[in-house]
Image (cartoon, rainbow, N blue to C red; front, side, top):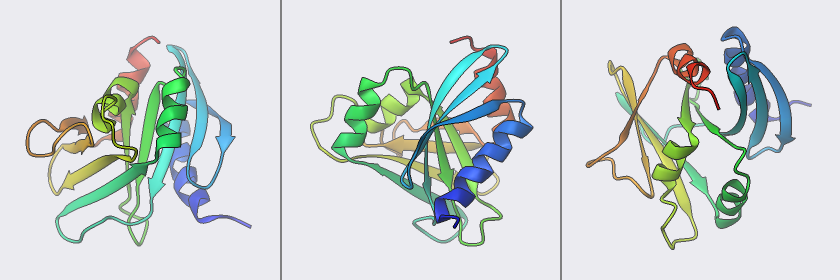
Length: 164
């Protein structure tokens, strides 16, 4: 039987294949999946996580991705993870979004130096905006959120141009 996460992870895989990436599953669980990607420009190890519903209604949509201490420690120990994909689901699936972060951007969002056990990465999508606003435990939305292009193909091409 298909699990709920299969639909979200499948959407991510479809985007990857359509963008010229060759994904292979590395680790499989309901809470997260790790993929290996190969391109002409380098190899990537992608930590993926989904949230099936936005945390609010309205024109400005928000998603919060929690990370417990074990997850953060495992990510920090595996330095080969160099890309993070956050699948931002909506109820009817059609207008779901995917946000890609580099390892450096992810570390900024979760706040590597924070003492708190639980961390988070949050995504805000404003209607009509070209970029997602990404923030979390380590970055405040009001002060210095990361601006990540909404166009997934363009975002993936940014990674293709950077050799790892």
